[in-house]
Length: 136
Image 1 (cartoon, one colour):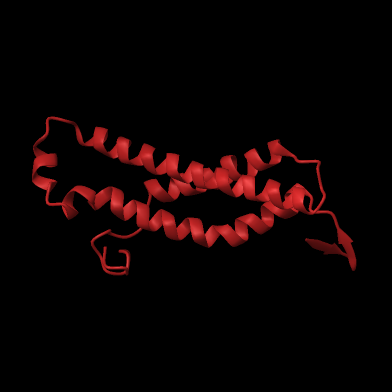
Image 2 (cartoon, one colour):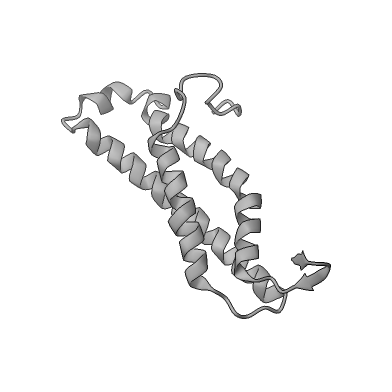
């Protein structure tokens, strides 16, 4: 998992968290982008935009519902990442799991970064550089 001065080390939690943030970071960022586009434009894609706009709900209600769903999906993905890290540690024979460190690093720092990205997302979802290239 790691080396320190040429000596192989145990897969301690902080090393596993660093590897997971690096390797799964791009995966989560890509899915975040796709999910954001789908959440914003789902009713437009199925031609229900005018009906949705005519409902007597405040704009904040629809925004908060979509944001809550996006945060829940991101938290679920981070939970899978945490389980993958614990499984990696167990497979390498390391059984001193620091669940608190996983929760702090993934659900504290990383989830807050992703929530801020979701709220302050750069770019217009209609713009070609920020939309999915899969044609959906």
